[in-house]
Image (tube, rainbow, N blue to C red; front, side):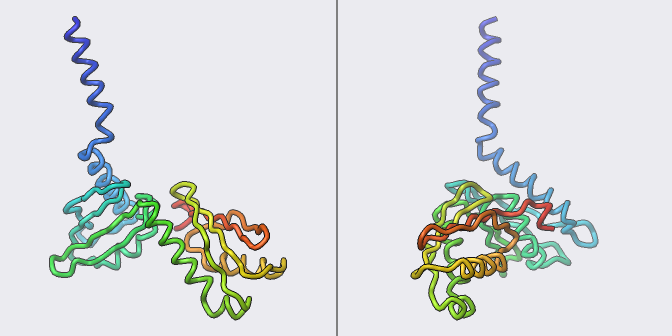
Length: 207
C-alpha cells in the first residue's frame, strides 16, 4: 500500500515538472508555430508550410527557431507575420535567411535589457527626425523605458524646455502617427518629463 502511494506521489511530482522541462517547452513552441501557420494559411499549393528543423532555448526564455523553406514560399512570407509571431511568442522578433542551407532563423529575444534598448532606439530615432526637430526647435531625449509586462511599456521623455499645451498635443500626434500595431494608453507631463504609456494591440485588433 505504502509503495503504491509513494509511486503515485512520485508520478505526480514528475508530472508537475513536465511544463518546465526542455522537451515540453520545445513541444509547446512547435505546437504554437504550426497553429500560427495554419490560422494564417501560410502554406504552398500542396499544403506544405515552414517546417521546424530545430529549436534552441536560451536564458530569459529567449529562443531560436530554425525552419525549412518549402517550395513556393519565401522569407518574405514569414516577415509578413513578424508582428503575429511577436504577439504569440512574447519577444522581439528578428528573421534572417540562412542563404546557403535554405533555411530561416527566427530569433525571439526576451531579454528585458535588449528589449528596452530596442524600444529606446526606435523612439529616439523617431523623436530626433528633422520633422520633429523642425516643428519644436528642440531635441526630445528618452531617459527611460519601463516594461510593465509583455504588452505594455512606459517611455519617459525629457524635453530641454517647458512645453505649451499646444506643443504637447502636437507631440502626442507625432507619437500616435508612429505607433506600430500599438495603442497609446496615456500621455502626460510633469515639469520637463513626459510620460507615454503604450500597449500592444491584441492579435484580433492587428489583422
